[in-house]
Length: 157
Image (cartoon, rainbow, N blue to C red; front, side):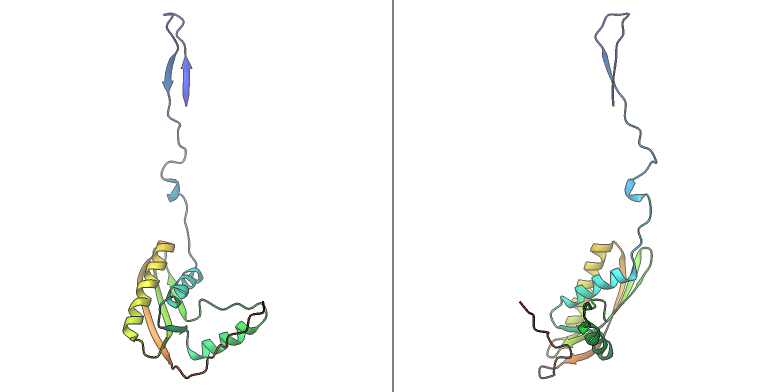
């Protein structure tokens, strides 16, 4: 804010004095208040990140996938990206449990490592939470000649 003041006694030109605007509340605006992140948010991020890894065929146990396939066929139902993912979210940290099905022929240890890296990077980048652990349970291997449990529904164009 700028103030113009004159000094009539000495006949000089007006003097300019600058006053700094006072910030109310004090402190960084980003630190005012709390942000909470629901378990489901972290589960969605982790589920999408895990599915992006080559060698991950599906998420969840056989029962969860079968139940999910039925639910997905219900009109208005959407594919659950959280299937096979469980998150425990604290104030600054989170822990994740993932259940995956891998494609036959891939190295399970390499897929698990890639899933961990991708999930940790995505969750930490998007939420700011520290991922303390990502536990991975491989519940099945998808064989090349096995029928697909969730057949593709033809798209009408």
